[in-house]
Image 1 (tube, rainbow, N blue to C red):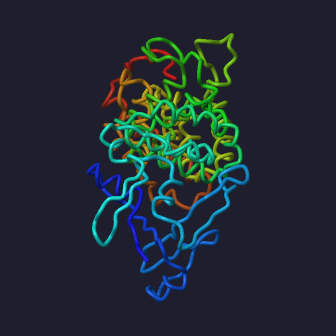
Image 2 (cartoon, rainbow, N blue to C red; image 1 turned 45 degrees about the vertical axis):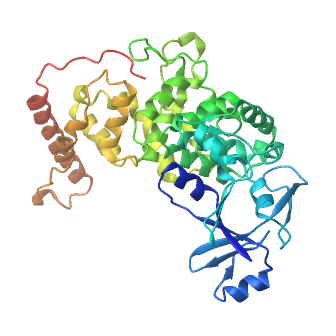
Length: 407
């Protein structure tokens, strides 16, 4: 029996990147032999042998043969005859198909992964790459995580052949790749590669609908090719350490994909239309509620929130209360999104968040407690008065009018 460290741990170590997950492959052993060596091992795999030992996962080497459609349409052989080279061959990219002998420390690299790391190329191992549609999303995700790597042209061509099978994938698997891409340094590459390969419309049709749509007035959209490009640029101005915020930036303008062409370059009412588009997208992908809520709030209020300093005080307070619950970072996250949406051309409201919080934290005097709805009305009036005092102190009575549609 031999055990190898495989996959991403080898890739990331050679790249000098942090190693988050380590996978091990067992070669040349039966399950009985493995259990004799690791008496505490617990089997967790159903389609092929996978064991947990003290929190570490060990998978038996396997070879696969395509017998049906989709990500799961494979016949799997996992027995002592399978070599480490055969196990590595079934993987997606050469940079993920290296192994380390735990005894000698030797690197097994039968498919040129180390050379492709040096060349900064994401390349498939063989034409068997095109047997698993999930690999299209995985390559797009790796491109987002490794922004200085290119995708080999022949790999891109094979990815295009996978598009017809994408609909067979479970939405949870698609979302997992998407969520990991949102946390990557170059999240936009995930969606740009999906668009380039013709895959974006399969699971992300609301985002695909933004391609070719005029984003809005030139002042706010200088240099942007279309609304898809605008949305991806907004997303990239936001921190990859906050994936819900990035998803909100990606989805804030989904309503523009539904605009009547006769209204262009304006997108009147796209905020409301965008909420239903976000909901449909998140339902399809089974996205977690934190992402759904962040994107819905971004779509619904991104136009109104930019005008908070000019609003009637009571309306401003009510909106601030809603945005305070923004899952992408509360008020600070929401105003960061707005500033990114305007490409820095509108006032940045994030420095005023502590002052807005003071307004919202205005207490209700004891004598007005337990008055039912009247207590809420009194509190709102007190908060509105505090907002007016803030407005006069910070911005003065004469406030600059908004430049135009921000989008």
